[in-house]
Image 1 (cartoon, one colour):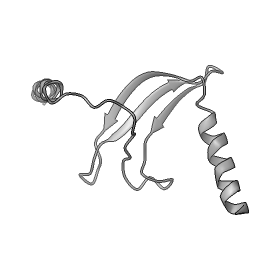
Image 2 (image 1 turned 90 degrees about the vertical axis):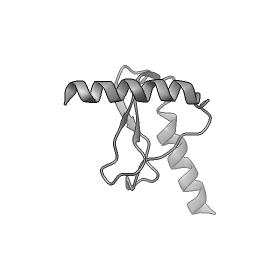
Image 3 (image 1 turned 135 degrees about the vertical axis):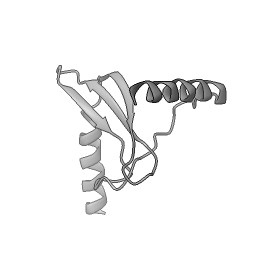
Length: 93
């Protein structure tokens, strides 16, 4: 039980640093082993510090994670962005 309380306390303080933070930019980075891309959130903490958050499946960084609670984009919006990204990829090649 004490270990569980220690874990809860650690994560409460760890994630609590995000209270009042503002997400200023989002990005995704490709996974080197072909898995899902890594979600990246650029944020400014309430003390003014700028940070980069990467959503991982665990503390060891063993692959990208997934955030629940966000409304997923429509298939049409996804298709349009994929087409745009493909065009940009060809232009930059």
